Each structure stands twice: as structure tokens, then as C-alpha cells.
Length: 171
Image 1: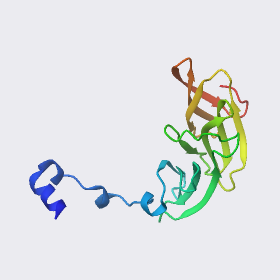
Image 2: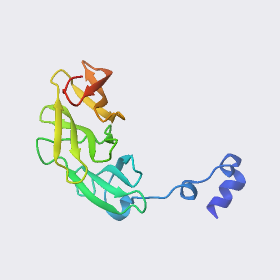
Image 3: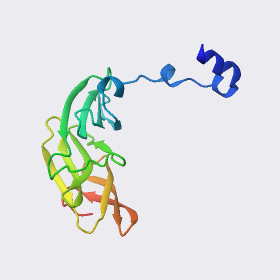
Image 4: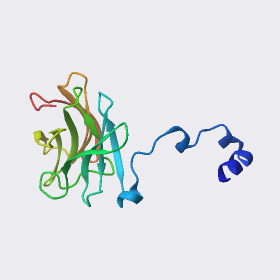
């Protein structure tokens, strides 16, 4: 009834598909009793989605099936140790390595930000990159060569783009 009225009286809406007509909802914050499910990143193989959620009361990275939305695993839980004090949930991104085995993201590490590389299966930290010259780092994105990660670095209130060589740790 409501759709019919909108399409009849709002011509612009008549030409568009509504979200539930063109997309499948994979999370439900009401059912899961949480506040956010965000920063989705689909695996290169297309079968899994990594995302940030507070469904365990702490900001955590989960992996779900891209097919049916079922939770495959919680990769790691943030906000409980000095490693992942704050998961940058407002500006956080997660990205998969090209082979789909690793994830990268930025999080607060003690008084500094860090870029992490973790195993997508068990959450083991493979690499951690911390640079005291940055006030903040965020938005890591893996290159197709599996060696470089681009990210945003903040110094003295100004943002710039950087590229990290994961083999040397240099940017």
C-alpha cells in the first residue's frame, strides 16, 4: 500500500527499485541486538565478506558467507587489549589480500595507530606497522601484487596518501 502511494504520487520513485527489491539484507541489527555492522569487504573469491560489528559488545571483525549471510567466524575482538584499543569504527576499512588469506585494517595501538595484517582464518597478527610520526592512519587497501598497501596518514592535521612496502615496513 505504502509503495503504491509513493509510486503513484512521487514520480521519481516510480522509476527506481527500492532496496529490498534489488539487494539482499545480510545483517539485522534488531535481531542481533547491536548498533553497527559496517566496513564490508568482499573476498577476492567472492565467497566471504569481512566486516566490523559490535554484536559481541566490542568492535570485532567478523567473516560471513557472501551467499547467505551466515557468520563463519569472528576473526578478532577489539577494545580488550593494547593491540586493538579502538577499531576506528567510524572511519575504518578492512581489505583482503589478493589471495584471500589475510586481512588488513587500522586500529589504535596504545597511543598510536597501527596498520595490521592478520590471518583471515584465525586472527593471528602477521604484521603490525606503527609509525610515531603519524597522528593517525586509516583506510588501508591492498595492491594486486600482495606486497604494497596504500593508506591515509595524518600529520599535524593534514592527510596524505602513502604506500607501504610490507616486506620492508617502509613507506
